[in-house]
Image 1: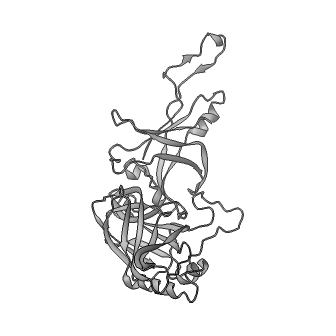
Image 2 (image 1 turned 120 degrees about the vertical axis):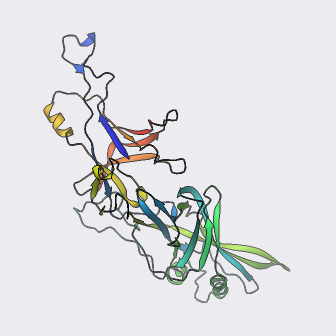
Image 3 (image 1 turned 90 degrees about the vertical axis):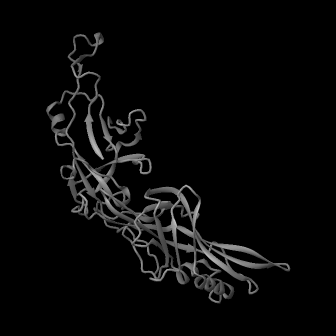
Length: 381
């Protein structure tokens, strides 16, 4: 993102008389020249990715920001007691992934999705109860983080090669018959009450699922709706004298769902970027970057701002705007800039501390010429 101006606004660069109502006073409206802005791209530490309402899955490459991959962990609940009788017959099992219609990257390339069984309990990381520790609002609280991971069985129980079509409804992947039939058989017996008591199911029988794409895949990252994601088991059941097809859904626990996000910036201008450190925009072609999924943010500094007010104590502030322009040509139709940018105060270690008053700006598109698309922060207060 190219940060262009921090200005105190006025209609004319010349000194203006306020009007006859103030005759005899020295009150005037003047334009203060644009302040210099020192920008740098900063890599934040790990951040909370649980309970975001989006399952991220895929892997894509950006020429300027490198390769980004997203995978997801989540807990599965049985969604109610599942006890098929012995006369019922297993048919099949599928993993259903409903899109939430967000995507980035090249959706023309196929991706191979793998689903694995988590082999340890998914324990929530809790915030330490120690006072005096500064925490980013992105990492404060209990939950799972972008770097969190758990052990899983290396052999997938479901695999499928698909092409993401985020404008359609769902992706469905067939679960291996060995895995699905075993679940069905255990549910028929249910000697240990795994399918009739939820705590037994999630804490003893099936700790959770890990979903990723094959590491050789470089295409796109798509978003899915965890509230609608499910494992569905199809089976035939007798209704009277007729054997009819039916199904049961094992749904996803949204609180125990989180995204693991990895990135590799080798071969880019940000290759030397370290956690909580910054690279000045002078080293990146006078461009700084924002990529929220990986914790990439832009730091702004205004070296002359405090001294200006200190040296001009009689000034009365009229307006203050921060105007941010996306770099032209970096947001084609399939990769739009963020709909909104946010401002936070920070300390010298680049930890975001708190939001700024007026620190939210929605994008304003220039549909006529395409050169004045911008975000404007109203920072008067």
